[in-house]
Length: 291
Length: 246
Image 1 (tube, rainbow over the protein chains, first blue to last red):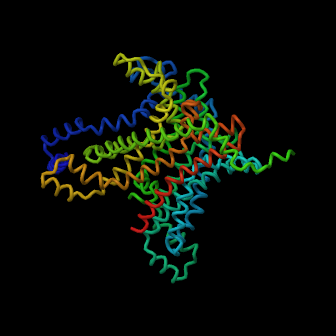
Image 2: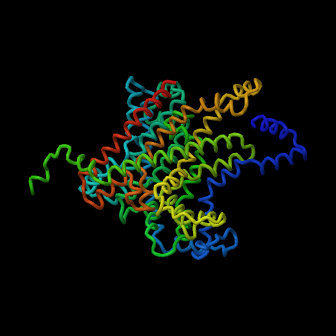
């Protein structure tokens, strides 16, 4: 089959009507198109449902396009529910914890990449192993501590937990990025009298900017979607979108069109972010083991 | 305060946990859920990666479609599947069943663990697929072309060249997913809300604390979950450590 596609590639270089026909045939035949649509179908289906009325959303047989397309669900979710409050909490918590993660992660990764000791490798692996701890194993101690410290249901409390959870991934991603930067350049800057802060902010940061950005976005996405701590230690004040959506699980009538609209509003920002950094995603999530 | 409240109880909590009628089913559910999700996500992920790797047109768009479920927050994924797809009277799957004249499946009543497994597998399929795709793209083309010139069939190439090349990424996927799958929580929380047939260790800890107020037994269950994760993490950390040397 790969022979077929390579010959296709050659014919595409010399564009002829015949090649155009082949091009179209290939597109229709290609089973990967169907497969990709099946994988994304639940999302596309919910997207459709978000434009239906509640009655159309539960119509049987289902309506594919023949329904009254409307934005009412979005209007209601934005206007009448506490969606905006949950959105605000999600932005504060995911954004705040991602910034804090970078603030702690950059110096750590700098030290490991440019001033390694014989313990650096062991330290990196130890950090990775902390990520392996199932959160549920520390639910009780965290809950008791947070109750005593007044951190339950606060932005700070949730953000600190998400920071702790994401820090190993961030340090690994940053470490992998910093390793690509030639250490001689940093050394030269140091020779020229740059302070450590200048060295990191003026010399290293611009060179590692793409890596810093993709680390931030991956961490932000993970924090945005985190659904263990956000469901367990928030009740009202710090309720995130995950908890807001989870509240739809107690059915007080048929709210599926509205659920779909709220779902779309909650996932679109991070899906777009995910699309933008899918390349770094693989090495980030496999701790550099797959590149 | 009663003295007994701060008494050291030795292994009593573990004894309570092991003799709790909910413990063994929860352990079994945890392992069954992991096995189910691994099989589906890696099996279909591999098939999908092989398809996408040779997709010629719109590869970028197809990739975006395929990886999207990975970025969907678990409560959204679970509720979309539960209410829009698996709902037995108006769900999409019920409609498909009606096209074939079969009665619809009431997923969460008759097979809650499988239903939850399908939802979780859908979220992890992109992860497996993306890693295998990345790895396939680093596969040596010359090696494949040489094999083709020597008359090797597509199946033989897959079996003798491609699959061995994918062994290590597959091991990484297996371990990473297992670690995360040990603590599947939100999908159970918003669909069945527990119950003997779908409670895993993570949810057992949660329900012991929230409904039984038994912090001792819950902590014991938490420690069991940590030990399980550590067994797997041991191998994972070694595999990743090898890539540090390279």
